[in-house]
Amino acid sequence: MLDKNGIARTIARELRDGYYVNLGIGIPTLVANFIPEGMEVQLQSENGLLGMGPFPWEGEEDPDLINAGKQTITTLPGSVFFDSAMSFGMIRAGKVDLTVLGAMEVSQNGDIANWKIPGKMVKGMGGAMDLVASARHIVVAMQHVNKAGESKLLPACTLPLTGLACVQKVVTELGVFGFDPQGFVLLERAPGVGVEHIKAHTLGFLTAHGSEPEITWP
Amino acid sequence: MNKVFTDALSALHDLQDGTTLMLGGFGLCGIPEHCISALVQKGVRNLTCISNNAGVDDFGLGLLLQNHQIRKMIASYVGENAEFERQLLSGELEVELIPQGTLATRCLAAGYGMPAIYTPAGYGTEVAEGKETRVFGDKTYLLETAFEADYALVKAWKGDRLGNLVFRATSRNFNPLMAMAGKITIAEVEELVEPGALDPDHIHVPGIYVHRIFVGTNYEKRIEQRTVRSRA
Image 1 (spheres, one colour):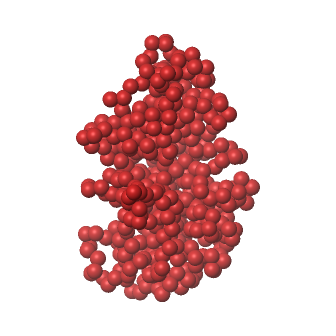
Image 2 (image 1 turned 45 degrees about the vertical axis):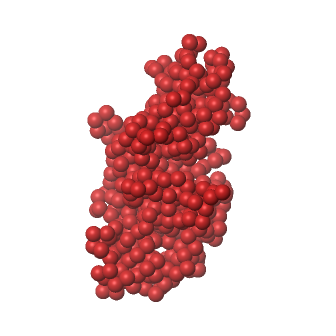
Image 3 (image 1 turned 30 degrees about the horizontal axis):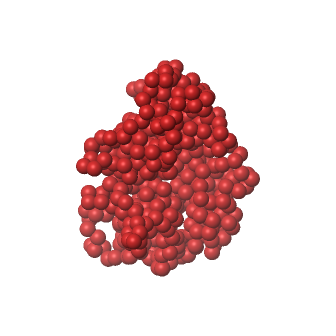
């Protein structure tokens, strides 16, 4: 099984030199810690920053300088600020190469739900609907099951949708999943996790042969 | 031409109950703190507020929520505010949640004099309900109309008495867009300078969009998530 850092490290394998990347709140943020040495990746924060740096040193926090998770951050040489319309302009125009975000549910045709539980939780979609409608490559980082132990990989989402048929890859503590016309496809298993265990925890249609390799990192 | 006011209360002197307001800021970053305090002081009610977020319980728009001064909220993300969630789930507060890029671009459209824009964000979701769609290429887009707001309340870093504005770091966010979109735009600034002091190449919002300006003092600039690297 993967822990949160393991999921982030697995997703970091998708990064390529020169990529512009938007990381969502939670596990996706951790992907920044696994950018390979020597690879130049620019992080886009949709509140208006390209070239996001690490957290500031204690005492150097600047209230005017935050990321989309409202955390205090820093800039890097070459960073640039812009307004929210330009920020979503570059997202809508497909300039962002990779988007990593969390989800409450993903369906076997790549639909994603992550912004609302009717009658219970209403936080809003923030920038997620814009990102999933336009990013070229969308990866979901999430736990495989919800707090009740139910699969979050479903035949169809039950919660209000964030986007249609847009997710290309899902990484959970159990493995890496792609999509084909039938549904989810198991691509890699988390270390020590068997195919039967994955099948038992996946409600959506899943193609898995048992010969899928365990996840390895460079 | 005199756009300069002494403080928030005088700049907001004619703002009435039932007004539609835009308020700049992302989270608590770059919010017009002094305008919000003045709204609380004036006690105006039945406001429609267009703002990316709704503040936290005891700061930002949360202060107006506590006083039940907001009738309708148009926002993209409203987590971090328990009172907001309570008023929403109980039906006291009307809420329209829209994608963040749609929110920004509907402001932009207003400032550019365009009645509407097309965006793919929200297609196939409940955001699309009742909206006109159109296919361009292989994608379906929603028609989204420009906002109409009586007032835009924004926070800039520096401004001059002609209303030219400069923003700082990520406190820029929605502020320039809203400044350009308001029928009456009121800017609060940390520093008011003489015309000529700002480099014309570095001005983010030309003063033609800004009707009133005042200096805010003693900004609290509360940090929502203080994250740091320890030196230890």
